[in-house]
Length: 307
Image (cartoon, rainbow, N blue to C red; front, side, top):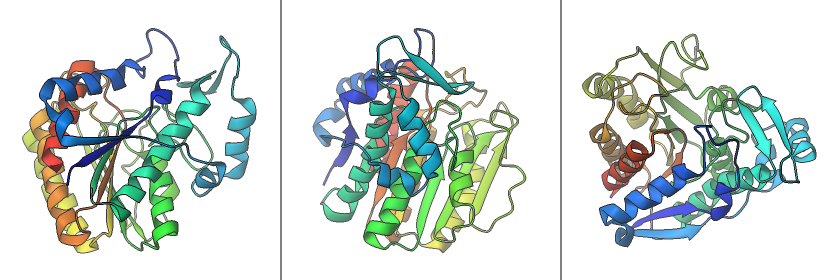
């Protein structure tokens, strides 16, 4: 049994500008570090397939999805802005469809194949995209698409979503806030974009806002105290992970001070819970992480933690 990594070259078609942090080189940095670390031979690598409109309709309004398809640029040099941070260019729609579709492929993998742990090295990210709006580099909510597909296709009644990106996963929370089948756990720096998550009241949402300067031991203690017992009690049939690595101390997107050690620890703890409750099934999808060296090293550490 190995870890299956889903990706696709089309995820590099989304190009905003030469200076935008959410750039194709992020995926290249991950691939380079996987090779450099020697993990390439311990992984099964597969191409993702694109999501369909029907897949997207499960977690987004039809009006929003249809508008994105109708407005999507098709010619080089064309662009539109979906929100002040989220641009679409000629290759964006295809990239976003393959990013969302990777989660569906990963769910099928862990539910039907020998490999029970997967990682989706994809872009654009997704966890800020809400029911009816793009936000913060995110067009389709990739992790939500995967969760909704798992519940419909396989009849799952308990899915845990763990989001350790340094920014609150407001879009995922928005989509599943009133769905008792989904336990949503998000840790994030506060105050920081999108400045949400501190007022949520729900038994199915466990938000951990932490201040700038939060280090690994502090973050691990909060996760150990708040998330792990709740996930254990929830007894998920599948664990999904919004894996954002922008909380690394080398990443200037925020002011957390996490390191590869913390991401390895998180993966190992989730693996324990998955083996206890859901036959080891974990689907992790890339969210943030913008300093290329630390991103690549952190992803490798996370993958090693899942082994």
